[in-house]
Image (tube, rainbow, N blue to C red):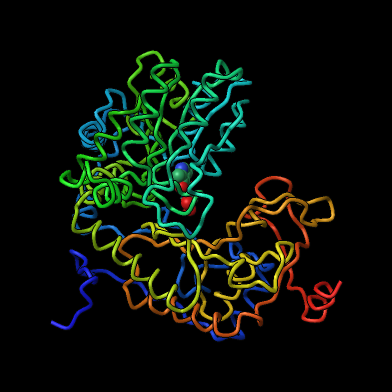
Length: 472
Ligand code: F0G
């Protein structure tokens, strides 16, 4: 056989499809201008390949849809709830499971029940809604990523880890008594989709035990982290992804899980808990704000799809093929001269826009510029993770503090795009890389104070303005 030995066949074939739109270059230009140059304002029917998020965007299986037909919509105690709960208890080992409609609902319920105002929540990296919900609970989110994460090119296997020395210093230092929670995000979405090792989780558990601080997982991508552990951490090379995921849950006192990712469904999530008292407080909070504790804002058919999805997602053949597909895209992109955060993760690739577009300064928002160019040239939608998202701006919307990196995330929905679709993405990027100077910068026209990336309006900087700014 002449196949690339790195090609892995996905363990499924496609049964139901939907058309994708192809707009002309002029139509895309008009659509992006009408969207205020903010991809969040584009309509889905203006997009050819949508890599904005891997959340709730996956394809379901025939088995999931068959299960959904059995959805029991009884208000309380539905059969679908028990099927879901049994699957989650089997996977996680937690005695208490509270269903929620998506991850951030679980964040709000847990943090307002557990954290006291003035406390600190420490993480390898908080996801943005997690960060916001810690603050809304009156506490302070603090990220302590491992030092290796700062080198985008290093191929260290576990750049998602927390900095254990910094964690210990905080716990034993003058602020130690203020630490109310340690939350490990697996995989580390905020830092290049990098995995967390089991050794790191074990060390975090020991530190938390010693200092009597609750240790939780934000396990939105529990199966993908488990796969990368099985491939990169020798002590776990004989373990199945499911065994590794279960072991990770066992190490912690509880978890938050958005099931819109590794639940292989459009909606859903849960909180897992060991502590009876904390469960009672969270349950009251859940009933008041999400729904009764046997549905938590989800329909019976959602619970059925999720129960089946949780089984399918830990299939080694599925995880191997998905990881290989992302790695293949990374190779194509890197071969075209575009750097990505190394090593490749699974749910997303992070393009190094600053390196590709050295003619743009952070105040031109190079990550955003590259994202817009991918749409203008190829109808591809993706998300900036750079100064537009993470930097601070003044009242005139001028950038004051840039982000440490200017990245663009290509998030890969699960079971949705074939390698041919991804080859197209690499080809569009390769064309940009041949003539990067044509990519123009952008400036902010208006921006809300809160949650800027979602509602910001921008405009392109004209070629003459750009040149004048560079001369100055
Ligand atoms: N935690 C992590 C690590 C996440 O990536 C997300 C969502 C959440 C929590 C919140 O979950 O969306 O179900 O409320 N991440 C999506 C993304 C939105 O595109 O990365 P949710």
